Image 1 (cartoon, helix red, strand yellow):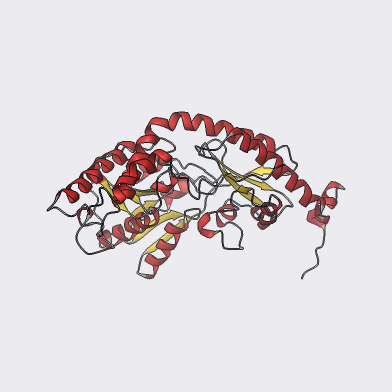
Image 2: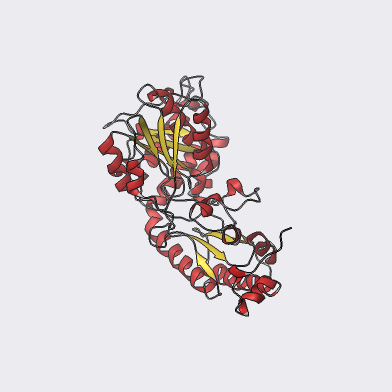
Amino acid sequence: MAARNIYLDNNATTPCDPRVVETMVPYFFERHGNAASRNHPFGWVAEEAVDYAREQVAKLIHADPKEIIFTSGATESDNLALKGVYEMYRRKGNHIISLKTEHKAVIDTCHKLEKQGAEITMLDVKRDGLVDLAELEAAIQPNTIMISVMWANNETGVIQPMKEIGEICKKHGVLFFSDATQAVGKIPTNPRELGIHLMAFSAHKMYGPKGVGALYISRKNPRVKVTAQIDGGGHERGMRSGTLNVPGIVGFGKAAEIAMKDMEKDTERVSRLRDKLEKGLCQLEETYINGNTEHRMPHVSNISFKHVEGEGLMMTFNQDIALSSGSACTSASLEPSYVLIALGLGDDLAHSSLRFSLGRFTTEEEVDYAIEAISKGVTHMRDLSPIWEMYKEGVDLDKVEWAEH
């Protein structure tokens, strides 16, 4: 096989769509004004561009443009939602409920709030990655102010039952926040319809530029308030001060417009390629798809190859194929994926998993190449493994007494 450079790590980041780049370019030089400069045409042009992009982003999620707060990305949006709500509503209560499979931007923020007096409940998920709705409702206390649940998991692609969670929140008068970074722009998202009051997302996960994101904050039924986490100038209606990234916001708007137009077509194509990838790789013995296979994103597959170490497997195809053994935010860690551990996988299967996330520019030829290269890599590594040899000979590995090192 000739060397390739195949990108199957779109959950880490997507490439910027050329149409997005083209839209952004004028705002680096010809239309370089500060959107907060109200005294000259350069500022007016920039402000107009931001307003239009805000409309484009709002339209994608069926929101009012005034409900969109621009940030530097989903991590900042997560922080603003969680910290901002906690500070604003702490007199009402200090309890926040979330899941053990959330993104680190949510988990670490919750831990920070815990040090400031918040009571945090991190719920387990079922084996398929879905939350147990009965357990979620049972966890609500009189002092609960917010439930935070990720729309689509970044490692498994599992989609949570957002409508049902929204109904639980409404029943108990609790705010509902969702990190929807992996969902927005790829599947239909309508926070108001599902009872979501705050929602974080980012441009670079939907073929827009890095360094720009948004936080949806409901303005009615209920009107949600958050305490600003960045002060200085009162930008974004006082909720997020700082000079706006005009080129990035313009690109975000264009990416949202393209997503609306191409979503159905993109979904059909990438889901077909994802299914082909899984069918090809699952021809290998002892290969498992992690997470619910019915309620998941159309472009994501998390697969474990038993008795094969994931990091070692990636070395067999000489970096010809870019993919991940977990979240990009935790890829420096040698620990097994905390998301897969939360699903009940043992360390061995968690360490043997790879995350495949296809995208708008993935081709069928690239999927064919990936199936062949990864299958050869798995076979090669198993041929070198004495454990695999024992498995093939029918040895009950659970009864083997392993020497401690």
